Image (tube, rainbow, N blue to C red; front, side):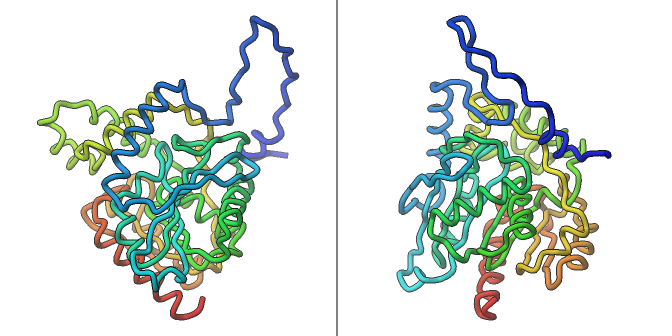
Length: 327
């Protein structure tokens, strides 16, 4: 029998524990994300806090326990007390960062609804990762447990990039708490290709370019990280401080996408290197009944960062429509 990549990881032989001696240093599991040291971690947190300051001020922060570790959660708004009872928004960030990535979106979203931004265990952030959760069922279990611990029975779930895979996976595997799903240039629709990894590395190297070169590089790469000082500092600090330990997620098959009945909204950048936008513009609505799919021009992988006013307005309108229909 041929096993999938995930099955090979799950069914691999378990190594025999090595007795600890004064000369044997404890090993960090290869499936657990971790900080290199406390000094670099604290520098990363400081860079994150500078980026958080560009968005809405968090009303509170809390930690909730799950089977996979402690999840750190930021709670925002709403600014209108009458909106406190509206179905909340839950934000799941992309790989290699934390919920500070939502700085262009928290102010607009939290003006209308309660907003919760989760730091995903396994990525740099203030969550504490203890058990592997890269497997699809485990990832869905983590998110369901986190929402349960927050007392959230119904949410509008929004994810970007790797967070997009997490929210699509949730709609497939554990949709019970979901009022809707919005996937922003997400993983989970196609196998991650070489072109995306080349773009990631090129973008990282470009953050170290001379200041005068950065605007042109940002335009060429369609990478706002290069020209937003706080975002650039956070990414650079995270690369130094944290070691991600998980494989790239496998895309959902046509059959798996076809099981989704949660109201679904897909937003992609026209020049995305993670997905082929025109292909998914046709495919996703064909497979997911009632799904919406749109392409945002003049952007690549970060439509919610490049065009926050447009994307925020469209997400809020989608959620309002879903709520008005009682979905």
